[in-house]
Length: 238
Image (cartoon, rainbow, N blue to C red):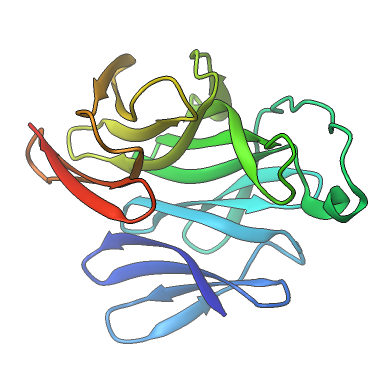
């Protein structure tokens, strides 16, 4: 099994999603002394791709299948299933025979963040093939989904040509999101709290945000970036 995602819910509670080499998935929970497998929703073959936590026993995860992606929530002893909004994707473009099975275009959820038990976020992108490039993709638009009031809704924001790749909750009830435009502008951070959105562009140089780490108890955030194919840079926002 290969690690797919991990969430720390409490000091002695860690959740890890793993995917098998030939399909199938497993979710394990660390209870302070041992890893134990947590059963999945009855017989569901979809892979578990993202997992996030707001506190002890407060777990959300994303299950992806060929036809549908859904959110699941741990209710202490069982999973509840919650449908996600349909995200429209463009029709496939003419392609060569060897590229037919690549799966593009499609909507892919890349990250989750859960500031509180009743406030969850999932971000991702509508992916399309790069012109003339088999097995390579680019973001047509970024997509933000929000759980509030007992259902998942799509947040309407203009994110054309932008890949949303990371989401992290801070301790003030907000969420930081990494926005990586395909071209035309620098990478930037999105922050949302209490319905208010702000943008924080990075300095000249980085071409992609790789990860975000909010500092607990503060308004500071560390940002790990990459420039080109191999140069890493780290920034602190305060």
